[in-house]
Image (tube, rainbow, N blue to C red; front, side, top):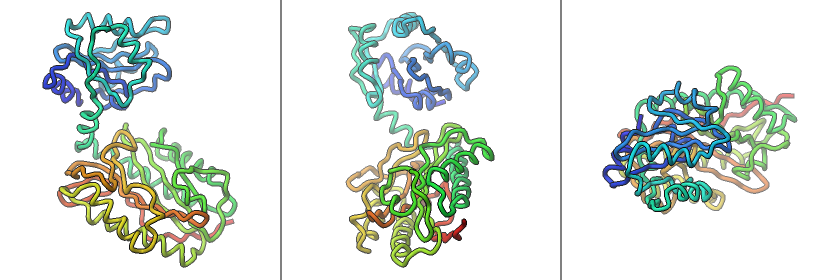
Length: 368
């Protein structure tokens, strides 16, 4: 597990207690994740004491049977979880004055509950930047899971393309994709709500699927991903259903060229802003700059959006082992939208995508 990195941070920063509140981060450090709904699910680590997972009694046996080999403390619904947490901490250590918390995810209510139990403690240290940094660089084990998630996304495209026919709704296509992922691949969780957008709807990048029906001779945008053993995929393709117009072909080819140029240009040592600029210049020079309305990409790993942000103005230096998306888009209101996206890992030899569905414009036959 990765808990040794956290414990080393606590020692180097002379901090007594780490309070981990994000289920995804708990999974990163322990190999166990659950959805506690409204209940309390946390990880506590210490500079000089053994860590423990705190969870509802409903999840106690599940946690004990997981990859986590440390202590698990459960609580019943009629118990006060914060008092039980405080008692457990005080049983393990006398040092609990200096705390580090995930400020990006700490709710006011939970902070107040902790503060009530430890009124003299200092909760000022922020773990979120440290966690974001260590999750930037993926191990070979993590990369293997990301590649498998990419294979599942490629399968989903095949299902989605085949589901297109006259009059089918965007939501029906999504349903078919997700059903077949479950039926044929055993995928029980997508990494985000699957997006299928036909015709002018695709000019609204994150509008999501509607009851809009697919019609002949328009572009259809797919944006989808899965979770494989806790790791996400995220990929986009745009296809022509029936015969595309010359204008549709033009914006598709501009976008495809921009995406491939960014993939080819990506290398360790360049900044995120420089990489964004590679694709943005091609789209701008072609006259479509005003229609490229988002960053070039985002990090990916245990969550579908992580650091780094591949955006204009972000001078973070790209390094080997970082995983991120490259996804330029052109969105013309009332006409069409095109996005082509691959996530991958940056190596010393360049960017290696996790998805491999062809990016040549696929022209699908009209089906009744």
